[in-house]
Image (cartoon, rainbow, N blue to C red; front, side, top):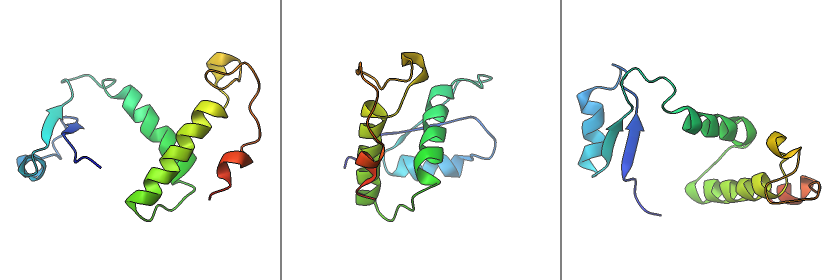
Length: 108
């Protein structure tokens, strides 16, 4: 897996110069969100919240390989099974209702 290239963070005072220096020492570029733009990270925060509620609150991740396997299965579930309200409860790219969720949960 490639190393991190960027760290996107807000401008909260809890992030000190020494916090940024830790990442910069590993050649990670620290990017700051725009000032006074509370919704700048809204999409990312929504995805993180969804992953936390639908995966991390239910499964204990024990290493990077396990995290990769769980995320791969979730992506498959999200795109092939999970109903989407904007598509009249159909998964993306589908014209038929999804099959049982147990099909993607078998490996857990």
